[in-house]
Length: 246
Image (cartoon, rainbow, N blue to C red; front, side):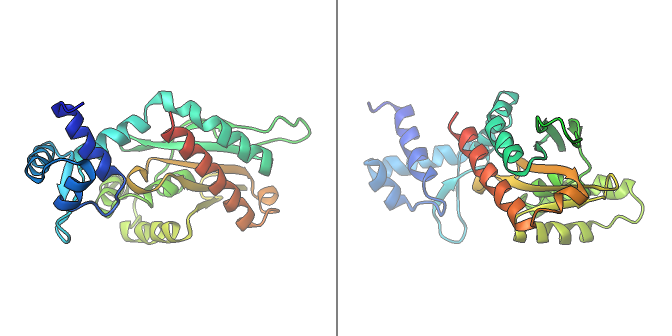
């Protein structure tokens, strides 16, 4: 099959597996297309932002237009059901409420929460809906993986509406979250309540979802933080696999 759409697809497919992009020569070799044809098709894809050229290397890379479509498809409501196995995994391992959150339309919403089924103790149920960008672990575990300009654009309205809130301080905290791979909310919203959250997915799909656990601080702190984070990272990997394979 050698129709134009198939040739465009071959180019995008070849580049999609190369995080550093591909040179024109490598792209032509990988697709089996003549160099002139490869250049013409790649140029057309650049015009609609499905491809871009890296300034440092000159390599062709996936562009903002195509990445935007991919990210939009991953945040559709129909995708939320794919979190259930991961949330149940967290509940089974930590015996506290598991949740997931999504960034959509400049807001972080907690979209699902599952509580343990045991009847001999009470559990925290966080509800669903919008979460504070500056306090909630679910929000911080998402924002920490966005581009700096995007972070500032999201935080500026909050800073204007909150006396004493400094974007620089929040950015410093998000940098730490990014470095350590998890975010914590220890009584910042509700006294005596602790939550820990980790990002779901990396690379071009980063900054879309987080997954976490919430419970009474005294009870959740009986677990080593390294144990909690390990469970959440495993759950995040499970959720990512479900999201990307459906």
